[in-house]
Image (cartoon, rainbow, N blue to C red):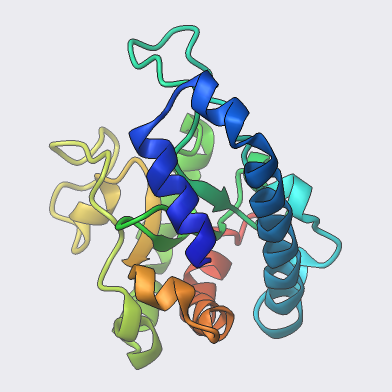
Length: 218
């Protein structure tokens, strides 16, 4: 991953078509390596963590480098990161909880869970939490979970408990979430370590019970 991080660092400093065209062959090589990495990641996840991922391919899980700038004030043409989201039911297009890995100099991370579900799924998830919060408590109190995570991420939170739910519910803060994700940072050194894949799988194993809870309705 060292060469990938170097490329992405240079891309961030030269995010324009002229530089990218000059370095396109370099990008293609690194993209192919990331696809191979992702295929290995999916295979190990399916074998060691989550069997629902059997049959998923890297192409289903990786984003293209070009940004959609049609309706954005940010006109940088290229993403400055590589990312893969193995999740059953369509990879990056799946509404299910998956196992995201984000590669970006100084901002690498692992994340799991469901990001910005539609309103019907969001309500269903909140209902499941109300009915089964003790199960989620047990998962999040476990030593495997606590090694890498603390709680659901706090991005995209409401300021108050949504209508129809008890504001005094013991985990009212969970009901305020609009996304149910958990994440942990990864250092550039960890990403470049020869045993990085083993670390990812260990983190994914800690995240799996949360995904299993969130994916209950499938």
